[in-house]
Length: 305
Image (cartoon, one colour):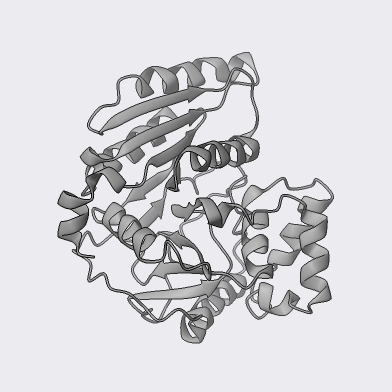
């Protein structure tokens, strides 16, 4: 399938874009502006899940976000779901993904602090179509770490991720919110070292914290759900997503620049790939994680909750 087919003959089949928002109007505006600059955005449906406030201090910010959302245009359609009570980001995302995929076969999921490459939607829609019926592939991801050595143009890794991602109805069906079960399953299979990228980053510890309610993260469970079933996620070699949330404004995010990437905004050479994990790309991720540890920076690669 060509990009031309995507943009002309298959407009009705473009995946809906879902954004989860809370109380960051300035970040959201930047995300929406970058999204509107993406190819295919005007032909895509936009769904916004707005979580409610906890305190009076947040009430004004949530109102500002919702007022801005009602003015958004430039998409095929815009639908806003306003939560009446605060659910917390983790639950808002879990419910929103479930609700979206109950009505649609697939979806593209974002948070309110992401800048997107001009060709992000072409990448997402192309590979959602290519691997739609291949159950070995669980999701498509938009962000890649700024590794020292060049990554392949596109590659697969075991597991799943959370900074600009997409999946199908059949993909989200494997999501398991029981951290204890996932922890035991990975431990029983003796996969902790592999789960931790050859012990370069302690993802298993995040999963353990989830199980004792010290860190309520939907995304570590998403990673563990896919990993434990040996499913793969596709990544781009040059990141198509830049995260603005590492500025103390996001949940579970510290102030750091180590995850910063430069969006190239160059047309992509999209093509089907052999479906197998890239040992080379995995080693580059491991090297990146180790470089953070060696720099002794107080950085934690949290999954958004």
